[in-house]
Image 1 (spheres, one colour):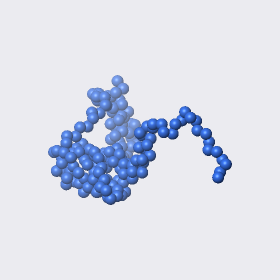
Image 2: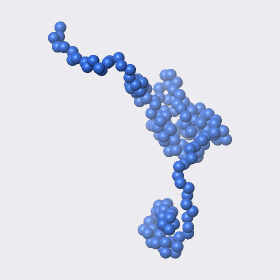
Image 3: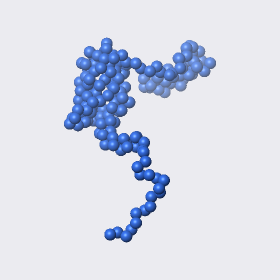
Image 4: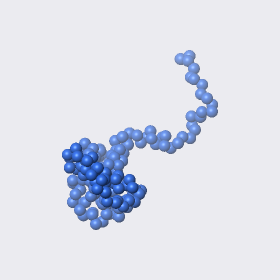
Length: 170
């Protein structure tokens, strides 16, 4: 027998005291979430990158359903506006390929479409100000600033920014 004594516990710290449910659930669900839960959160957060601007307006991923024994592959349920549902049905193989390509493994096996109106929250951006035309001096200054920019797309964006800044300054 070991002569060492167990350290005395503080009597005010009960071992059978109630604990927050989140503490226990986190420990219990962590292995499952490592394997499966991250995929849906990533799809929802990155939907605009994965699906593209047209699909973002008409669709919204809602949940993933994993069949028992299916491994990582799941059925992704997507809410789609009724007018776009048929189009999305034809695009399903492409969407699945894009999602799986994003993850680098077969995260989604098939799509389940749920026809429902898509409600996007209104953006909190302030109303756009009406822009005034630039004066000839401001136009000349803007052209002077953009002289060294050769990339057409970059020049266009910078010119738009310059126009906004000049028109807002008065």
